[in-house]
Image 1 (cartoon, rainbow, N blue to C red):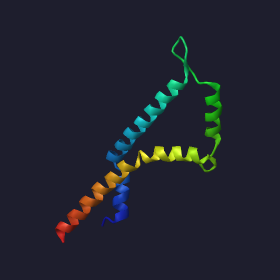
Image 2: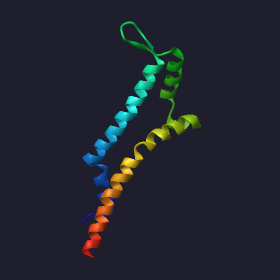
Image 3: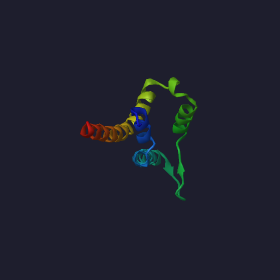
Image 4: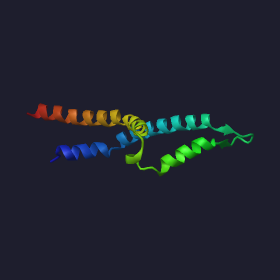
Amino acid sequence: MDGPLTQTLSVLRSEKLLDQLASIEHERWSHWQRYLHDQCVRGEDGSLTIPAELVRRWSSQLETPYIKLSEEEKASDRDQVQRYLPAIEGELERVLWSEEESQGAVD
């Protein structure tokens, strides 16, 4: 018998949700790449050079565990995660709601 945990795990592991999250991730990555490219100096050969100040800042962030980030940096990371939650919530609601409705039809 499928309980709520089994149903939830099924949704979280579904190919549909995986594709939704992958699409969001691609949008996030594309946004970051546009930002990064805009910050760089383009060489004659098309290469990009990241300004030294950004290299210092980002290198520092790369080495810093989340818990030790500034509140502003943590807020930025939380904002990024917020992009994923509507897809997860929507898919859970869709599956669990349809399950509740089908159980109600049986009762």
